[in-house]
Length: 369
Image 1: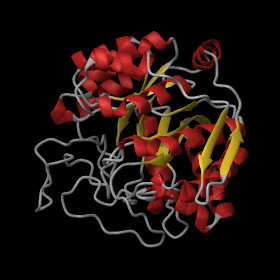
Image 2: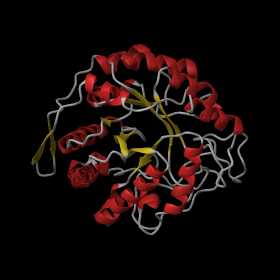
Image 3: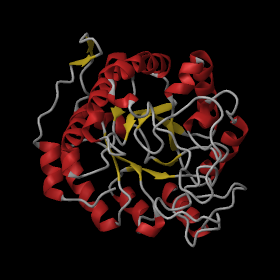
Image 4: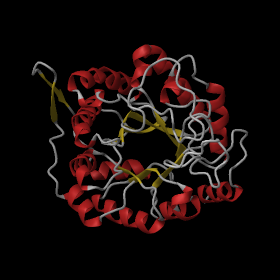
C-alpha cells in the first residue's frame, strides 16, 4: 500500500464522478454491447443496521497451508478439508469469527457443480468453528497467467510465488473474455446469495494492481452490476488499497458502489487512523480486509486495539505458515529459505503453535471482551 495523501484521497473518493450503478454496458468484440440491469446499492441505514447484527468481526485472509494459491485450494484433486478443519480450529481457539477466502473462476469452469459442492463443504467446516466467510471473486495480484491443473511448487523463500490473478492479464482487460465470467458470478451468487454462513462478497481484490491501473475499471463495473443483479442478502464491496492519483477513478467507483466500505492498510497506526478518519465520512461500516505486516510496524499489538476502538472489522493477512510463503517479505526473498528474522505475515505454525504467544494471547483477550 502506498503512503496516504489525504487531500488526494478526499478528492478521489468524494468528488470524482460516480458511474451509474443501475445499468452497465460492456462492448464485446464486434461492437455488441451487453446490458446488465442491477438492483440499487444498499442505503447507509441498511448497511449500518446489517453491521449492528454482528459482533466485532476479526479473522484472517485464509488459505490452507497445503495450498499455494486459490486454485490449489479449490480444485478437486487438491481440496483439503482435513487441513481446513484443523487450521480453522486454530482460528477458533483465539476467538476469530470470520475469514476472507479467495475463489478462482478456473476452478469453477472445470466443474461448476463440484466447485459449489466444495464451497458448501468449506462453509460447513467454517460454521462448525463458528466462523463466517467473506468470499473474494477476482484479483489483480501476482502471477498473471493462471492455468488449471497442477500448480507450481513454491519458490524457496519467495513471498506468494504461486499466487494467481483472476482472470489474469490480458483477460481482465478484454471485455470479450471477461464477459464470459458473468455465468460464474451469477451461478455462485444464485447458489449462496442467501446463505447465512457467508458474511460479505468482496468482488475484486486490488483492481488495477500490477500496472493494470484503469484498464481494470470495465471489469470492476461489470462485476458490481452482475452481483447487484443477483441481489444477494449479503453486502457487496471492493476494497480501497492504493491512494495514488492514477487510482482516482477506481477509488471513486469502489467507494461509491460498495455497500460497506472495505480497505487495506499495511502502514503504522498514525497513518491507519488517518485513513479511518477519512473513510468514516461515508457513514457506512468499515472493514479492514488486509493489515498486519510486522516489519512495516503494522502489528497486532498496535493495530488490532485501534480497530476494536472504532469497531472496524479486522482481517489480517495469513493464518498458518505454509506454501504461500507469506512469512517472507514482499520484496525481500531469502534464497536459502531460512527463517526470516521476523515473520511478515501469519499467526501459527502448521502444528498449531503460535509464532508469537503474546500476539495470540492479545487476540484472544480482545476477542473475549
